[in-house]
View 1 (cartoon, rainbow, N blue to C red):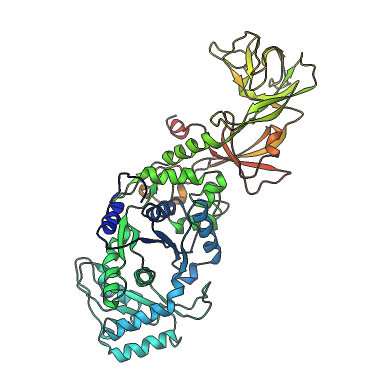
View 2: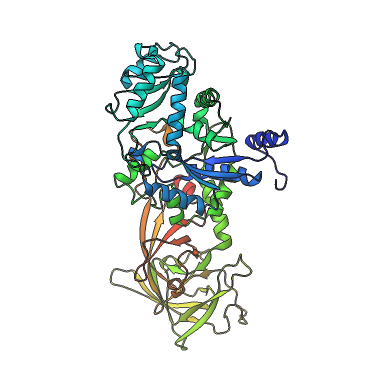
Length: 551
């Protein structure tokens, strides 16, 4: 075990289990169903399961809960593996519930032989009615009294495909009066003819999640099975199955799942967004999926930091999305390369710059002492931001205007002499002179200015497209919102902007993170090409959302 730290309640349990000699080492598992892409909520579970194993010197299995073939696909399997690896984790074994179909079937037969399971011909509606309510006990039916021999024969016939889908189910025979509704003869197997991505058409019966989960944990000798709070009522059945089968006693523990503002965490709802065209794809940069966040430019370090900061709790709560964005900003500030990009340009002509062009040096990241510098071409015609020029400057306006001086980032101090307008009254060109003694890093001019502007040399500029992303939903807590959740999609969640960028961007690595000066943090999109560079805004320089909502 690594250095001492304050332990959460699950870490305390594991620490006690190891100290008492209950286990020599721990084995956890991350068990996603491959029916969609992983989201930030799964990242919390990934960090917890793999983090526990790492901290206590154990290991973690990646197990796919592939017991519902109609909704599962190899595409999701591949995306899940890519996400876990990108987050920085390695599993000791790659497992599938389908690996255990023969063993799970044998376990079901064992329960039948003990008189603890029976084949039921009731419809789903009839079973639901027979289960009663939380205050009214359930009632048995004639099928519950079938003999062991008849149940064995019928279950074998189910496996052989002799009955139609939904015609029969296998149920555990436990307690129809149990206060825990999950213990009122829960379903163990159902008939479902669906092609499985790994076993093909070998099976037409599939185990229910509650049956496959605990038994799969036991088969793998999982010591600590970490689930979210909604599985608390399922724990009794988890323990019952292990006890009745006399198999390895895996134990289930629960923690609060991640709920976050301005976000949905339901794979069903996320699938709706994709299928109905509200977003481009599962990895749309507005999606809370891990792949979407990766495409947007979030870093694995920042997501792990976020998961560490929110901690592990026993009670549900909702985490502010701004905390995740803070973690992203904090990491990107350390690693992002600084670049200059102009989004709403006007031309700045330096009338006394007669060198043609000059190659300047500009630092890549002032937060990184080893970040080095890059070459930036400078000429007598530059693009600057329209907002950085004011025809009639106000008293505390420290940018460019008639008679005002500013420093051009990594270049010279310039002073505005005049400007031109078009027929509509829009400023098109600003004319200025530069002080040759004011070069950044070599300034001997003695001139002091308060404003510094970013710029791009007009004849060297490259066109780029910026995707400025914002929150996908406009309300903070969608769980309390009335009506369809899609009614709250933010119509301004994506803005596309054409811009001019310094030429270094065309040569930078595809996986580099950038801070476009005064614009925000950006990351090159997967659809970007040499002929059309596209950059996604990862996050703004400051938390502007809260400020915008107060207007």
